[in-house]
Image (cartoon, rainbow over the protein chains, first blue to last red):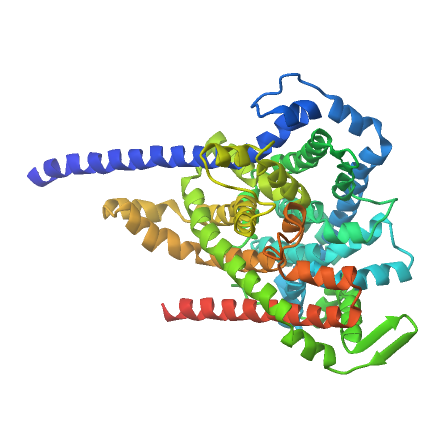
Length: 286
Length: 289
């Protein structure tokens, strides 16, 4: 009995300690997030200012709140078509990556076949190839097959790093689905394509969402290949942004507004997958 | 691990992936190999030169400098980003609305196009219009990333830490989420200290995601191009000219296709080699435990 009495305060002290640590953790996290968002806030802040105000001094809020930078982007088709082009090739890339990676990931997660390990490693090794290495060959390859300056060219070029990643993530998610489900379905008379589309794909919905998110993420942020493979028709917004350097100096406000608009799609996409993203970042295999 | 059925027909399922990646990977790679052994004046005048470009590239002092800069840079950001990422992951709330919010906020930098990241820091670091630059001059630090090589280098590192720590943090966060609550309960019963919980429960469970994180960060920092290009253009001097930068300068700027191709292959091999060494060392360390 006395021993339990003596233990009680020790326990609560430990608890208080834990609560303190928790508070410190919250504070640290808030500090980190504030530092993280500060540069982005600065960009947003600048995008609502005129160039004279930007150059005349620092302020945390725009004095003369203006939308003219955004108005300029949305009224000029050479500007806003950049966004359309980017979204277009990113979506194409997502569709291509997912449709080829789904069956392949299934094969890797369910079957043993000749060269499976080598194939898997080869796929991943493409993720290690610096895009700068492929710059010139890509340009020549796509020019020679007449795909230069098309959306599909950029989508295909980005496949080199999105497809291996998609296979990797999907394989992790698929390995989490018990094999018995496959077998039961086959016994029930499902053919493979029917089983795959009707039963299997709905089962790994969240995995597909996360994979799409990752494809989006890596295709949306890439500039080097996208810029090299396009000139006018399919030019991504990221490349168009370099136009803000003109004879009269930098158009900072316009640059900031264009930058802010490139952040928004990413935020929307992560909002949709927020509940699955923790698992997705572990590539489905913790 | 369930046993897998042996079935070579599975190749039919892998075929589409193979074809699409081969189109974008093998053909260009072969082109690079082809260039690397030729001296090219124009599309119709080219000579076979054997391994001459490789010799030239391996002995090139500019490449050595860029390689050294690259290694110092990659290791610096790994040393900063990995511990910081773990700390952030430990601080992130695990349930409720706060968890989603923290997740979204932390992930934002990952979804910004790389050149916009460069632009953000280009603006942020300027003393006249940027908060960071202004703050540095306010506290009396001489800071100009456009003219001082050390400042430029530090800014690129800071930018990378800002940009990529979230990836490490999210990887670790998902690793931490996979630890069953029972482990923590057991630790509480044993009255284990916070440090002991971290050292003996959380860290071992994080090893897998940390391997992925370190490999991804190493590979990506080794290929870094866009952000420093936008921020500093590789300068001042060549203080922030990393490998990709000098490769692009050579291939597109000077149009030296042969040497650039040889450079590309050496570059690719270095990445493969270092990743392999990393991977096997970590795996062996795990086995020893």
